[in-house]
Image 1 (tube, rainbow, N blue to C red):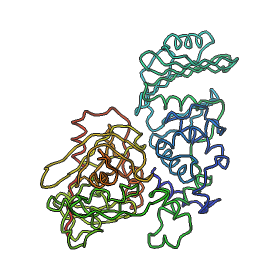
Image 2 (image 1 turned 90 degrees about the vertical axis):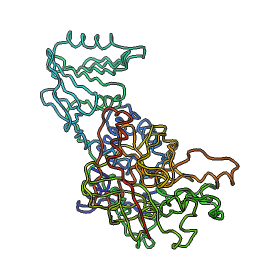
Image 3 (image 1 turned 90 degrees about the horizontal axis):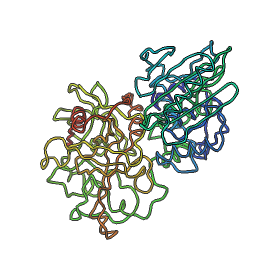
Length: 531
């Protein structure tokens, strides 16, 4: 369930217990206001990412707080953490857990509870005295057996023998024993035995290296007795926070000037740098400031104004449209990608937001929505759709590999262009948190194209590049591959607000580079705009 949909569900409750005020949404997050169930759910989400390694007990101490700060730091959020950032993260975490059906399962005969991916749990291969299950979306395996103390001891001895050079984790008490190791091959093993009715119930978990966070989350969930569900109740602090934030994001742009301080402050926190220096003169055409590039002010540390459609080669050196009369810009091109089976295509507002005639792959298209602040637009075409892009369930981490697909420099280059790079910063110019910086080369015409991870899942939308000539004139140095993309989670929010449910990809093995290009070509589209 995506953020906007979660919020819509929350709106169905009979009025929030606590509607967040303007000051509260931008103030520092205080976990003391949360219920134990909300704290446990946040702990579980952070355990999946590997930032939290404690028990899912709902006790929020320094370990939980530091884990939250570390988690949000990977998204470019610095301390003190504002309430709105925690809400957005909680929505993303809820989406992840609901996708695989993660829930707490109680076993009455053992009087124990364990977290399982109910939507993707499969029977494992049978073995003597063990009940086995596998998580179909990861390498996580479950094994459960019941026997005497000698059998339990043998299982713990086996786990210890498999240990690699790292120090194993050992816990021994009268009625519980835990052994956790990492093998020489990088396999994670966790064995827990609990005394029950004259015998010992033993859980054995295993997962390969990349899935360590999943194993940690499951092992931390094991508890005696019944446990509360993993969820954010609509009546809780986070649930009511969804309502408040949804109202902000869904506000009519024409009414935002008259809204409370919350709308203004949250919008600034999410889409703008904290301060803007005085604007510098805009470059003229001779300086080569193309529409896909940032203007001179951007070189001084502020975002460029939303540019117009990417120019054709004949106008590749023209100034941004807000620096020239509209009549000068007669045509342009950009990129988009299919986001629904109904022919919805996502692109930039500066690509498709102001066109007399709009076409996708040469076929007429209709502009459905454009958000100038986010620089995103949704268009629709009647052309048949065979492949729809899937979004990554989580934001792209810093230094992760990405690919950019698009149609740059139309008329000079032909066909789909694919470039490779990495996420070089979690923020854009001036600390803009809605944007991430990428090193993959982009050119005029790439605007609106997808940025995908190694699984072929969309993590961003290309929006701009830093103008090398203007920046060099201001700094004396030529920037290299300083390009920007709107975060995938921002794009998903925009789509949800327009009634389009973005698809979310699942975990799996990364395809070969050539397969990534083939998959991307199936949903990436060439867009033209004429005035």
